[in-house]
Image (tube, rainbow, N blue to C red; front, side, top):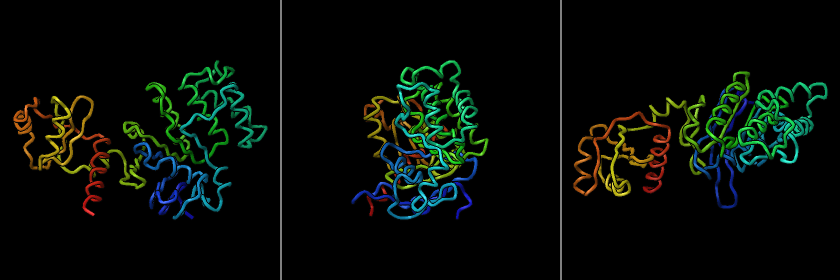
Length: 314
């Protein structure tokens, strides 16, 4: 029995010949927020569904809230809150009616239902809107209402699968404030997203690609530990031609487009100031490169590039 509320050991899920999640090891402590970060199709939702007891692992094992996800799936589901990436509330019911319905599903004691619903309405900022049909609410309200429904039974573990997808930035920020409040009260939270900027809100970040966990650590640790070389921002045009030219240089570890500029990772002893002249020789205009601090997206791009290079050599 693991001391951590969430613990996975060699967790694997296969669908026929396709391996969606491979040998994943993950442990999350009480009150910790871990961001599960990776592109669509990386295996995030499959992992969460296994941890929720909704999918049986093909290999490995996992424990959630002290229960084995394969052998005690009913007990697992009674001790977790789950918010899926697809909005799961009932549009033709009001917010209060949805909360009352889920209170029954989660078997909230009758004497506590009124208090729990009032708390969820206040937490979601729905005072004055709780009698509106859910289908008439904006995305941010729906999102916070769905979180309120997921925590009505006060679960010790929360799984949030792409909870901020399609939500405006202000509502997304408020949602993360709610998540931190819940963690402060002792909830253990795994939240998946493909938005790298959201990882900065997490205590630790687990980066997943093609079903494999490629790195885990705090955002600061990952930026400092995983990025080999020095990172520069380069304004140039045309971007596509510049990217192709830079990727052919031996001193360039990795180059990628970020908005209207390139991020270029160079070997530590490389001369970054020589890049504009090299590009000018190929009829590409470029300004002087600027040293920048890496983002988690830079780290992820580098880690994935390393994995692809390793597979290519095998």
